[in-house]
Image (cartoon, rainbow, N blue to C red; front, side, top):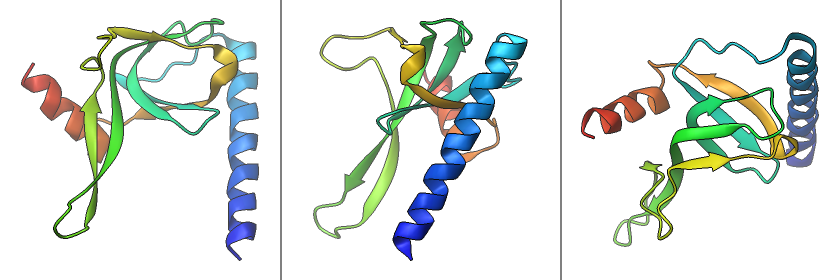
Length: 125
């Protein structure tokens, strides 16, 4: 049953990616209408940020966030934490993406859990 569900999700994701890519080719850069976008890469990584040059071969993502799973060593409870990119050893300020590595892009609603968390973190910086 799980394999069937995973297969269906993969097929739906692939179909969605084809539609998005076709839309980009036919109409130019997509209009998101939200300050932040979720960018899902072929390897499954998801980054949240402000996407520029979405229709180009090398889109740029700025003001980037990603989710990290953390486990409490005492309770073994797992939680998701939104992390602002840039504190890594190399201090990245933006990310240049290869368009072929992008599976799909979605708008991040400001009243979503991710949108509220981004707003909270950007308020303090």
